[in-house]
Image (cartoon, rainbow, N blue to C red; front, top):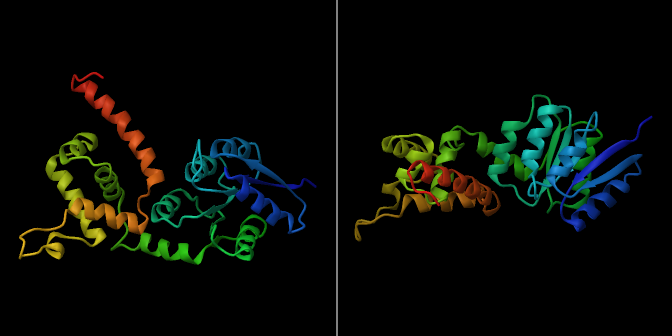
Length: 251
């Protein structure tokens, strides 16, 4: 009978060693293979009939979410335990969009007790049952609630203002009118629970900058973070170079 093989996608050697020892303590007949980044993990997993993975989310080459998306597209039977120091809403939101129907997966925080991490990994990979960290479940609830969950276009607007784009640039990038941009932003502000009246001060006749306030609230909620904004910045820079060329402003 073929031995089970568990892939650990983790770029931090100490975190990998922790997981390796944790699995060895089970006494199960399994092989453990390390993938130092998401790209290697994907290549290895695609060679397996029924991939079993533990994956960090923030990794070089290919992050855990994009790795899972590509793997599940080819092998929806793959079982993945995401383990991360982050319970950011942006990751919970991204996962909700890519998990295939009836797929078994898990999400455990690195800050959890060792016994809880071991239970989560064993439950998903060997017992074939989903396991979601209680703190992550709370974030899932907020991400799914109709009054607080952002739509794709609202999230797109959040990324644009987080990058510092003006209304004109957003309109150009998203093929919108200025009125369309304002409509998206107003919808975003509503979902985040901020408005001009809430922060208006009559004595000084001024209000907070809603764009900056939206970014601050989104950072606190985990809708954006510095790691993922680096990728968004790269994407924007690529678009902006193309846009400048179309405007006759060659670099």
